[in-house]
Image 1 (spheres, rainbow, N blue to C red):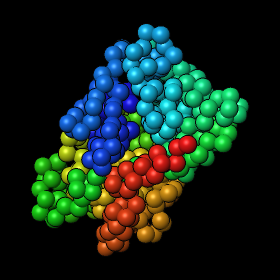
Image 2: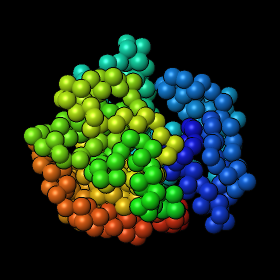
Image 3: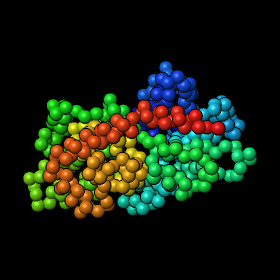
Length: 390
């Protein structure tokens, strides 16, 4: 993994699983540029030098340094000696276990469709294009099967985080006889948990929300891809002609185009109903103090925020995309929505009318996380995958 921390989705997954594997007696070596929020008494960190900006240089220099075929890379030659070489995506070119968080050609299609909605500088457009080109090439080289096991060695084992990502992997690459095992994302159920009413009310008071408000929370960056404009327009439609309805939208996170979304709320006359909360260090409390998780995203691999919201006792109201289609049981743990403002608004109105239904869905979601989406279970699934290596 290039950079490890507990702020970003795939990086957080590496930290959680690496620590748990080490606690179970495995010797875990981490090749990363940065290793933050990680217990280094458990995991041996090998610092990988290189350029950390822009993203395309970050990827390219890391990819070279952990490549045993790169003549100047002592790190690559050292890493090649391990029986299990586990990479997040195509970061490590000689990996034999690969967690698939997303498939770049599939993601690119949605990014192209959304390009017109973003105000991105020309340098940023170029570096983004270059990053996508180089990572797609790296994926093709690592994921594509090129002949018999005798000529090429055994294919890697793929661990996609959802059924949808597994389907995308097979649709875009000929992976031959490679084994595919779905290993989902998870939540720390001690950190992400239900709050008592006093703590919920206290958090709301400190963040401009009333105890009686029905709070839909949206979390993350890349707001155009995650459909924040649909969430804002749907809230406006849901309260149209009903000023007494206490529906509020709390936006946790930030985006370079924040101003455009703030202007949209003003144009719709709902500035008082949308709270732009900015980057949060208290995201577990923000989720647990809300009433539902609203996520009209266009594309995800398997959003960690979705599982973490469910762990906090929230119903998941989201589009049917990778991950949510595995987790949401309509009417039980949440509801599916479409990229249709009227349909989202109708779903919100229906849920607003019965808070006990919201609470029941939240309890069901929390129970499902505890049963199927914990880091302990993910670590067990990862161990089982390692044992299957030839």
